[in-house]
Amino acid sequence: MTSSHKRIVLVDDMTTNHLIFKSHLKNCHYHIEAFKEPLLFLKELEQIPTPDLFVFDIEMPELDGLELAKIVKEKSHFKNIPIIFFTSLDDEEMMTRAYHSGAVEFISKSMKGTELRLRIENILHLEELKKKTFTLNEELTKKLKINQILFRVLFHDLANLISIIDANTTLAQAILENHPAMKRIEKTAKSVHNLKEILTSIRSLTDASPEVQSCSVLDSFQIIEFLFTERLNQKKLKLEYVCDEHLRVNIPKSFLVHQVLANFLTNAIKFSPEGSLIKLWAQKDQSGVIININDAGPGISEEVKEKILSEDQFYTTEGTQHEKGTGSGIKIAQFFIQKYHGSLEIQKGEIQGTVIKIRFND
Image 1 (tube, one colour):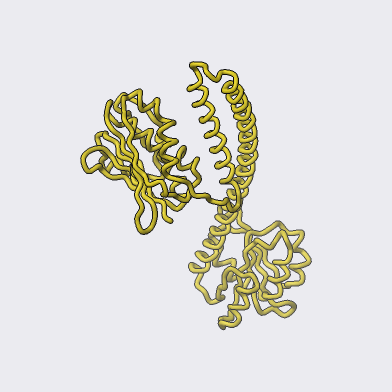
Image 2 (tube, rainbow, N blue to C red):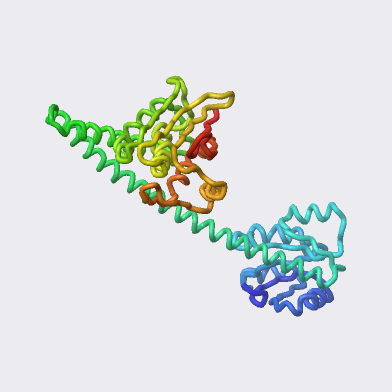
């Protein structure tokens, strides 16, 4: 909104001050409506167009500016309109009372025209920004509510479908006990179980204060090995992992497995040459647990590392067999690492490849 559309209401018992105020702002093209009598102003307040700014004198015979400001602020449709005091008083006690009454600025009548114009221009500009921010917040709140509803619908429908698959795989296991496809059926059953864990964990993210349960790092490594067996075999890759059975980290197991380890192992497979070794190990230090993933790929440059870790960039390159990606996997992993107070570091391997170091503090 330009200055020509801004409305200012001035209440001052001295006509001279009306003239001074208007002359200082004559080139700003504001619409200024002036009142000499506070009580007349209050009587006509409901009929005048809603202003963008109130300017009150403090010392007036019928009603002083501080009382006037209090009355105006009590009216719901005027409470968010800024008030400034245009006065010859300058003692600190009066200024304090003025701000406590709801004023946003305290302007001396002896102030030069240029400073007055800049002060008022800044106040109106800040109010415009506040209105835009408020509108944006309202829109975001509405969108969040819609997204929450959509999430619940999606979660509900997925849960129903997974329950059907779960029931069918359980039935198939009972009927086809010695069938050659039993290994496939068992793997499907485990995958369905993992899906149910993921959905439960994701639903917990919407809780106001979700309870964080620690998980076994070794169990997570074993699940990852099971989930990635076929993908590793496709490139003739070998996965080795070392972990003390007592090591635990404070993150739900489904998030550690599917959102963190799975995304980094996918990248390790993508960039590892056929027939090479991927190492996975965990170690404890004084402040927490560090999980390491070391591939046998070409390593990583500082430039690429910066792009990968950038918060506002999705970076991806082709793998050794032209595997493509979206760059979103690392972002997902980063989100969950940070959410559970962890940290991520990417280094060159001592001999070859890249080492991903994920730290979770105790």
